[in-house]
Length: 468
Image 1 (cartoon, rainbow, N blue to C red):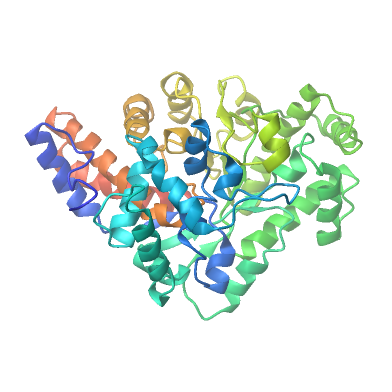
Image 2: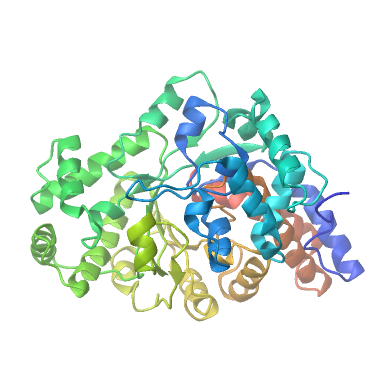
């Protein structure tokens, strides 16, 4: 018995469903363009087997272990590493059994659909995961993972990926990307420039990271001019390994366009560790505008991912470190926050700034009107907590009237979970086809145009926006 309904996410009304299914049939097998994500480039470089089912599906996936944590399951029992190197569960079968016994917690969530899609379509499983089937699942998946066709490069091909971007810190040596480039494999795995560690004075190691960037580039990063030149050099280095975008994960969407003397003074204060929270936010904001100007020079697409109140639990941060499921959405302003950047470069059609949000209330009120008028702006897809069928539907409903389809950039999966990539893209394709079918059957869009839009939302917009 299949784990998934073949007509999932399509409208219940027969006429609308038939149109949605026809649209989906036209784009279902299109290649996957994954222009922003967090898979490990080492997978593709070494092409080694994934270690075990728990290490593939549970321990590294914060979508999974945050739900289990919410019901009292200890992160140590799921094998999540401690920052102090303390003891955690290392037996993959025990971790898997614990996960399976709590699988009912994922009912109705996007994670359940992604996981079932992976089980059914990647591993050929036709029975539900439960405490009773846990060992069978573990043995079956482990046996598959030992086979050559389940190595990362083989799965890349099987998933129909045409291009995938990883995300590396500005000081990364990109050794795995170099290994990929120097191999005889023709898969397209590119990097993206993530400078948070050298533009956020509140991040641990800020001054040390800037000094390292100076060593890597030969510029004197103790000076404002040398610091900016080092950015240009590192961006050029990342472009050698395919980068077409930079990525900026800031607490707010604040931008500034400070006089250079003021920016230089603020930079010196940041290097000394003397910035207040307000000054740190101002520096981050100014650096977004500097990065936009650099994008006009080198062509990198600038992605802004604001609004996550990261590492909300001090206890979890102290024990397990960053990115452990305790990043929580917060209210985010865009109209006021982006104005300095937009006054500086917003009318430039040769610049692409992709905006994301974790604040859905901003879609119709702020983001769609901004993207619907400024030539440089595009809207990123429903992101993170809203990377779901309902979140995607709300995104289309709240932005299309003002921004249209062509001020958006299609879909990107933004995931660390490799096997979820085809599942996430399939959800996006189904939701978009369902939305387009509603427009067709209510007389707002011709069916031939809907087929063109479906193709663009699935494939064309991402390729064009991210220059792939």
